[in-house]
Length: 213
Image 1: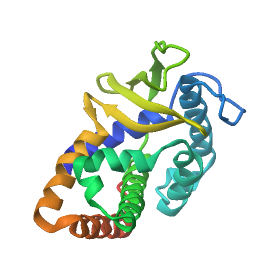
Image 2: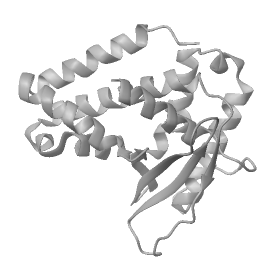
Image 3: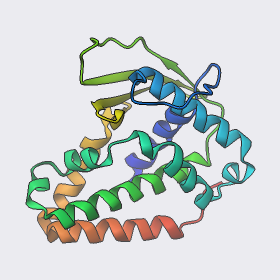
Image 4: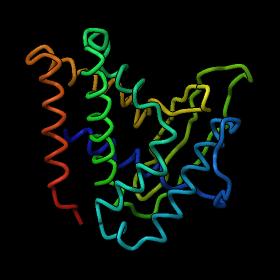
């Protein structure tokens, strides 16, 4: 799990902090994918700076922030389906719903722990190279901080509700691919119900863990 902790810190830093003005608008169905990322990041950044409790590591407050300002612009069902790979079709509808819920909670809890540890970091956005009729795009960024620059890319799909993030590449590793092997191993050993139980137990551990200072 060490690689996930390292990747997550970089991911959250890139998601939450950028250079430039804060956007007052709220993304809608017509918002371009690169603009969507900037708007969401700016909104969350302003919220973090305005809430001392989040800065102190108040996990319930952070979880609430992520649920309200980040989750609406993601497609967790597709993220979970891709992380499951061929095993997704072997799951019943009920199991699929459980997996989506538990995986979402896992990512939120993981992000929350890293969010309270943010320091001075900014993000440079690369020019989006995409055709007007593209249904999937990658928004490329570079996280700048005290260490070496960290490439951080967002993969988005165009849905009937606007652009949604469904995968992220941190330091050359796609989030979905990083979890796919772990999910596959759990399923091969304990079945799909075993994976659901594994995610539930992991979420309980994260929920009871004390934030790192």
